[in-house]
Amino acid sequence: YARYAYGYLSPSEIEAHMDDIRSHGICSHGLTEDTCPCGCFELPGPDDHGDFSTDGYYPEDDSELIRKEWAEKEERWRQEEIAEASRTGMKAIVLNTKNACIRSVLNILRLWR
Image (tube, rainbow, N blue to C red; front, side, top):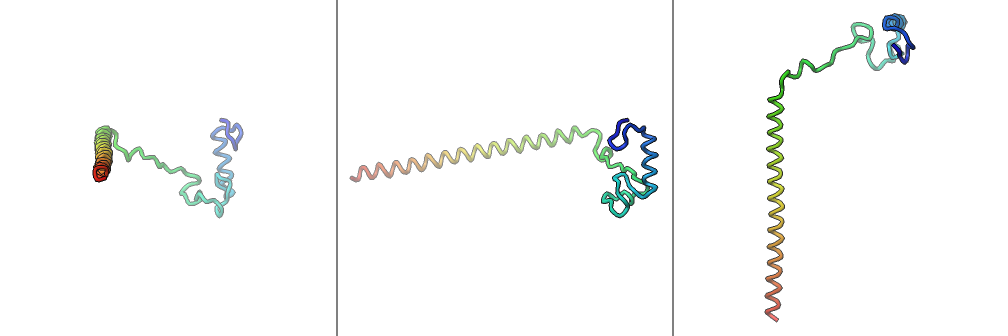
């Protein structure tokens, strides 16, 4: 086991070394009780590891939920495309109406001369 801080010590040798360091009041970060920001000395045992995994939180089979969420996203995308298309169509209608009005006014002015 090649380790950065411990050379080629075996896990049992590393643990023995850590126990020796802990007995002198130094955590695995090389800091004392007063200076370690990680709270190593607040845990019930020296440098204990807490299990923070979320395996128990998520359901085993969530494929139905994923299918439902995906269907909702597709519906939302479809609605957004429809809204965007209608906005584009309305812009074209307004632009054509403006052009027709301007042409009509110009034709009236030409006839009036």
